[in-house]
Figure 1 (cartoon, one colour):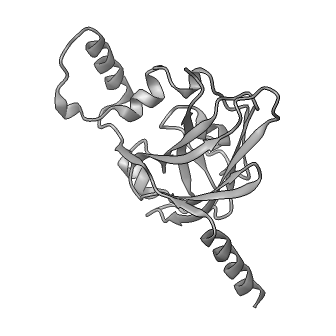
Figure 2: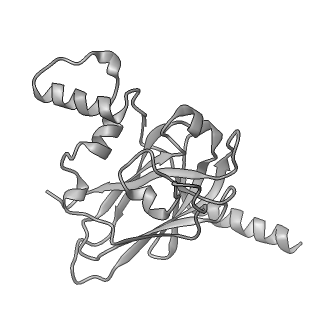
Length: 222
């Protein structure tokens, strides 16, 4: 009876929150990072690039160094409620979800329902409008299918439930428009965004749920 009541309460709480779907979904590039860097050099030199290379938006975001919200914005701290223990030379710490590498990941031990990532920002930080997520172990199609991926994240703003981010089950970058969050005011205190796993897409080989990157875009930079 108590378990059923708790499940009902959790479902009711979710129902009161706005559900946000991806505004845009961008597939992972079919080229390696090394190939991408060569392509970028060729483009800079005015060469025409074969259209079969495809959309390089994800790599542009992660590796190009182009101007973005991060020219003025930054994350002060990032913590996880828990992490999968290191395996050999690989670790699965919270920092991997915000290191601008699609190959390193934050992973939970088991499916991770209720586990979370918490990002802390200074009051003066430019405001955030967009959350971008590389969902799963996106470094390869095999790794992505083997490990569990997030289906729903509950997003907390300043310690209060704010919205449900509903992710598609695809090896892509998914961008969510979340409204205008933060202050851009150096008289304001630090503030937080927390992302809590509510549901997952099960992996074919491992239970562990993986997020490769969760990062941001916004305003007030230029």
